[in-house]
Image 1: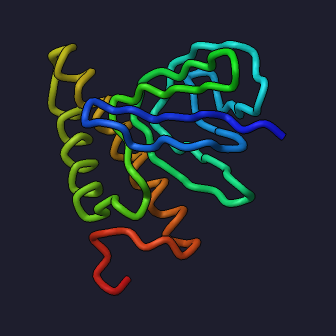
Image 2: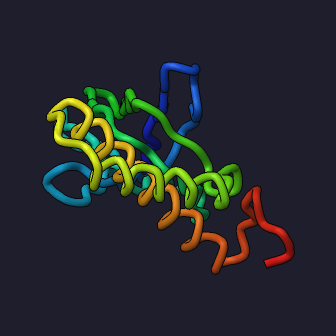
Length: 147
């Protein structure tokens, strides 16, 4: 079966670049899965989990917005606003940032500040969901103090 040439790029650089079997991630319309020979597609990415499958093993990521482009010849590129592996998520920092975002949402009346706070809340909730899910499966995340 053919492989997919897959790359995740963020403003900080290339987060992931390998040949994979399939990619599942969240868009604003719901979850999609890309398999080899998928039709060309461009879609936005919502904050959430991405699962990359290679040789029967899954590698999860938390992605925070951006775009996916499925190109001809089994090439898929994700341009993400930000992203990280579950084991790199600092749960204490994510929970504290979630609380700050909730407070900002409750206290602001400025539409721009409200939108920024809402995006921050969405990002932190996605980080927490992905870290908790994979922590329960034995992935080690940073910020764990013997939990």
